[in-house]
Structures are given as C-alpha cells and as structure tokens.
Length: 204
Image 1 (cartoon, one colour):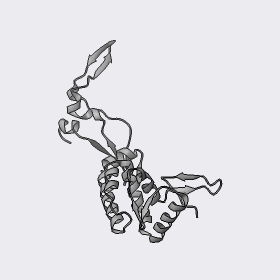
Image 2 (cartoon, rainbow, N blue to C red):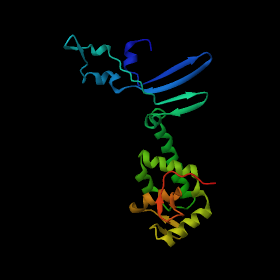
Image 3 (cartoon, helix red, strand yellow):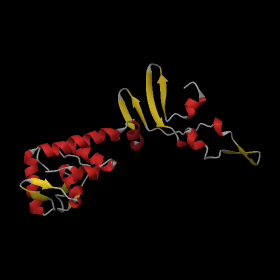
Image 4 (cartoon, rainbow, N blue to C red):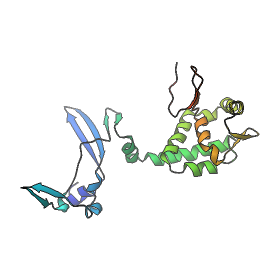
C-alpha cells in the first residue's frame, strides 16, 4: 500500500521472511479494528502521566503476533484452520463439491431425490466438510459397498428406509445417511461397541 487509507481498509497481510536465498511466506487475517467503518464505534485511550488520554483514531492500525498459515518450499502449514478456510474461500469449493456429489447420488440411483439433503446441508460448513469427505472417499461409487450398506442396515436395524434398493431420505435419517456414506459407523473388535467416527485411519 502507498496510502494510509489503503492500509486501514485492508483485510489481510502477507509477511515475507528472507534468509539468504530462502523465504517463508506467512498470512494473517487482519484484526477487525483496522476497518474504518468500525473505528467510529471504538475509543482508543492511552494511559500516560497518570491520565487517560485520547488517541487520534484516524492514525490507528492494529496488528497482533498470530499467524493463520505459512508456506515454505511449496508446503503450507496451517495454524488456524477457520481463518485458513476463510482466506481461501473453501466454502465456495465445498459448495461445488456438494452439488456434484448430490447429482451423482441421483445419477447412481442411490436416492430418488436429493433435494431434502441439499436443503439440510445448505452452506453449513460442518455438513459441507462431511460431503467433501464423502466425495473424497468415494464409497458411494462402489456398487458392492452400497449393497452391503443396505444389507447391514437391515440386519442391524439402523433405520434407513430403502425401497427397491434406493434410499428414501427423510429429516430423521439425514445425519445417518451422511455417516454411512462416509463409512463412518465402526464397531470395536474388542467389546463390539458401535461408534460414529468422522475421522478414520486404516490399520494395515
């Protein structure tokens, strides 16, 4: 930036640290008090000479020492996942994943209609992450997996409504559908308790 007003209204900063010919780039979403539209509601006071004195709010720019993520030699290290996703607009990408996956559900005849599922997922980041995980694992594309899912659902009485091999979605079954399509219902081989797990690591 060249003008102070540009600095004040900026929303993020990139820090470049150099040593010889190597560089690390760090990113931080700037503190909310840097925006001029918000400064009018805030008083900046300095304690000096045993008195509280006003600071000129037009000359205020605040920084903190936190970093959201940094990059070195092509690898990105994330320290604040929420701000990282916000900066890269992950929500838009996951919404695209949502639409692609839901259409594939219909094309593969997994559901007769995925409208209710789309309405439930909406723009909720938690559900969008689940759908992106479902897309990444790709279990729903495996016909054998889907056959076993329907079979085990009947044996275990999990509650999915299936008609002619097609899952019928209702409000009560949406969470279960998202869990099962990501193969997230797991049974302990030790005491046979059943858990719903969002994160899984295969044991070789």
